[in-house]
Length: 525
Image 1 (cartoon, helix red, strand yellow):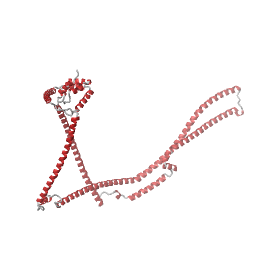
Image 2: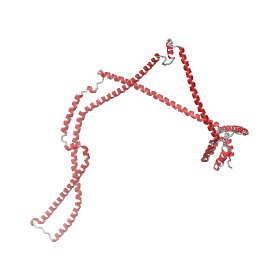
Image 3: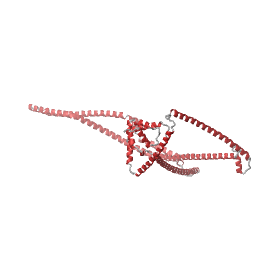
Image 4: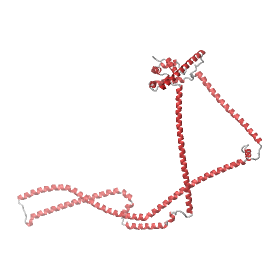
């Protein structure tokens, strides 16, 4: 069974008796004709009742609860602000106390500085460094010791070659040329290695050749045998030739093997010899460097321990004295600024007080015509003097002023009222125009006065609805008390689930349509 506009109208009337007359069953029929809305309407008519509708009392209770919450929040904010104000007051009190302590300390330091200046003017107090130390004799002594050091340097370092001096004086350029020198040294060492290797090989070959010549000479000497030639027979000669051939082949193989090893051994020998020479040269240079370093250490000892140590000590003492004087000068500048500020403020206060005193004297001694009419009279009354001016002319002038003020007041009020009346007339014209536009062209232009019968029926219907509303209110109160007595919330949970399990898009669309229809009317019951 589909929900019709009449059923929906009765349902809504039962829930909200104060529904506007603009909403009619015919108007609701247009909504019920939409098939997509029927599931929601069925669920609405079956499940929604007066329990789901908030009464004015519930709304008022909700507003009161919100107001109570707002009041609690405001109280918390107020307490927080009070705490912050107390904290700020305590911090300000601490700052002022610290300022008072520092001001008192500054006063004591100024007093101490004044005492120091007074003692210095009378040649009292702690003596200064440069007034007690004979600087001229100290400078002469340091210059003489510097001359002795120059003589010692010339004696100890006069054997330094010009090349070392150039290297020491131009150390940066020598560092930049190290790569080129390394390349040249490597090439030179390679050349020396090659020459040494060739010479050693030639020496070994010469010794081998010498031994071979000696062996040949011994063999010839043995064959010659002092004139008695030893001529072997044919068989011995052949045997000797075979042995010598085998021995020759064996020696040739050995010579080939030894020649391969000979070059490697000779190269290793050359490298070892060059390494020995380089180590000896490095050792000699190291000894020279150590001797030179020892001389420099001795010179450093003479120059530092017996030379500029005294000047450094003097410089440190003078820097300490200068630092103290600098602090004193800064403190004096700050004190001068502080005293100058206080003096200017005091001078300004004195000028202001003097100016006020002059104004007061001028006011006392000046004529009453320049100021107020009652001024002179009042002064004379205070001083118990005779009145210079009579009181009647003054009262007449006072009455004239009152009349003039009344006239001006009436003029001002008249102008104000006229302007207000003009604004009200303009507002009345605008309201009349809007009213005529609403009657002629507005959405309620068909509204006409109803007849007596319809009005009577309307009154009876309104009374019946009022009675029904009272009955509903009683039942609602009973249900509210029953709900308060019931501890469980299962029924409320089911109602909430039924209300929010509807299609949200369709519900939002119907809500917008109903809202637009309600906005078309400018009147309500």
